[in-house]
Image (cartoon, rainbow, N blue to C red; front, side, top):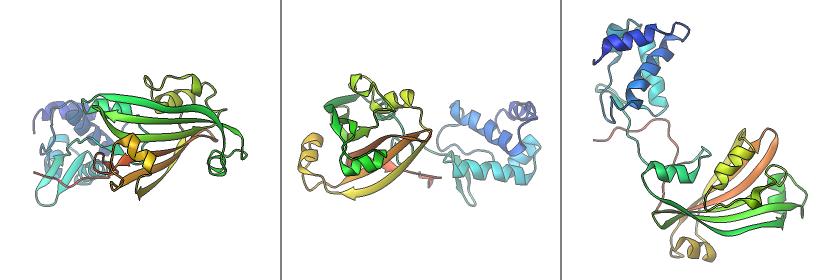
Length: 251
């Protein structure tokens, strides 16, 4: 194992951390620094026992948890490998789509179709925990990656949570980024479904009526207040939605 002496010193340098957590951090440091690239075979349980002076149970727990967190892929009888990093939109994380696209080295653009104050329909009022007919902020934005539409973001916002929402330029900052700053996220819920697009959605996404889409209905909270409810529509063949707790190793 490369640089085992340094790894052992790192593990010993923090005696307030549980041993298994220390082993995990040492491995993560090597992965995140790029020293151990995707598909790199990391030290086995027995090698960690010898090099770091920990028990086999401690080494096993560290490797098992890293695999569950998607950092490693474990193949029985073969070993543990650094998981590959692929571009995707996380299902159950509230992330900024502009950042996801930038991480892939691509260009994000946003086109604002609607940005206005409206009255809450029964469905929107229920989602935002407001009275029917109450004032709400509505934005409808198309997000593109390298000039190709990849998401419709149809969002309604509770005015008390973000009173300056309508004053923002959402071609520069995304609603996600603005709301995260204005009303820090404390919780979220997601409903995922497959659906055929409506005619107006086909026009915005430049897809055929026969192209299936994936949608996420998402509500977010700041403290105990509902901040927004959004319907995110993705063309099924252009974008992948993913949730994972470990991945199969691929050659």
